[in-house]
Amino acid sequence: MIKVLFVCLGNICRSPLAQAIFDHKINKYQLTNKFSSDSCGTSDYHIGELPDERTMNCAAKYRLPIDHRARQINRVDLREFHYLIAMDFSNKKNINHLLQKFKIAHEKVFLIREFQPEPDVLEVPDPYYGGEDGFEEVYQILDDSIEHFLEYLKKGEDIYV
Ligand code: 4NP
Image: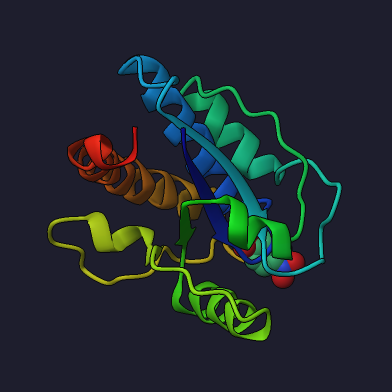
């Protein structure tokens, strides 16, 4: 089982939506025996909270089940998850900082948009201080990125089974 962890700052907007999209796709492609996902934040700002209401509305619009409570990334995550997938440069920097702190070598820390064939920019914008339309934009970016990420994972699956 390949375990994927989606990481953002608060774990109430981008990464829970990424997790919901990923889980929906692995269900659709009958890949639940090969891949699993979770999400977390680098901060402790929203620990225990449900996703932001606007995240919930966006998930409902696309009929994505979403059942998550915010949590902060921890040392065990760094060892347990095969892929650590950040939403923006700051998340990635924070992950790498933790890896350094705990002296863990991890070869699969990526930005999710690195999997998009032709991204405009490499970051998923932080929608927290904006309006509902920011969440729609985040959804479109994540849906496309994750489709390509799964393509990438499927190609490599023989390495891991
Ligand atoms: P997320 O968005 O990292 O996509 O969950 C944010 C959520 C909360 C905050 C910032 C970004 N905050 O500052 O509380």
